[in-house]
Image (cartoon, rainbow, N blue to C red; front, side, top):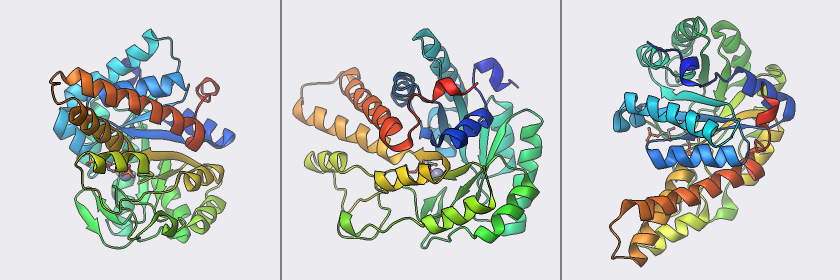
Length: 327
Ligand code: G3H
Ligand code: 13P
Ligand code: ZN
């Protein structure tokens, strides 16, 4: 058992406090490998942004949890070595049981999500509350979820959104004492967020629900999952070099920017990073068939990901240059 503090991570408490005061969203970027982590540290370090490094259950299985823990710790040390002074949280994304959350807390995570959104309301409250009690004794933050995002959420496929019911949020937060709440307002996971033919037909996310929730939970951190924009530049490169992504659309960045202005404090982005990576690897291998050194194409993908992260932090989340305000 190890405390996250020994590994150099911080919990999300002060990040969210300052995010609410200064109207920005802390990025939650997912990792599965070394190059993604390096890109996050460099992208957030160079843009002076706080960051939440997210590890899903699938990432934990793919990369091995011990490896990921020390990779994360290595990221913190690398940031220090490079002179970056940014707060870094290590977060379990979509934890689906008390045992998984407990295991991550015992293992050095500074924040966990218990995703009970598919459970019946009272059951969601019961398990979230249990996770919160365990986590808070160890100064670990807990994100919970109310409402179901359409698409695939941790092996559950939901055909339709079940938007968060604003009338439930105060009761849920008061009874569970969770530190942040993910809500369903029309975002969804993956590269196919809307059944539309063209970009212009993408509907607005439900800002009315967000505003209602914010009215009830004043000054409380709200989280948006499924917030990749499925950037056309990278979808086009993937398709140009042999990929088959058809009618892939995400949440327009202008909507995400608006969400941060309405007080969303954390925005989760995984798919956009995957697309950048795949696009660069496909392009490079196709243009240079003689290459077989992974550093060549992975290095290029990492560089592009750094640029994407810096741009998102600055132009979409408004988290760039905010790290110094977080104690
Ligand atoms: O919200 C889900 C994240 O994008 C993680 O996806 O379960 O495929 O690692 P994953
Ligand atoms: P995207 O699939 O839109 O990147 O969402 C990621 C996410 O919500 C991780 O929890
Ligand atoms: Zn998610």
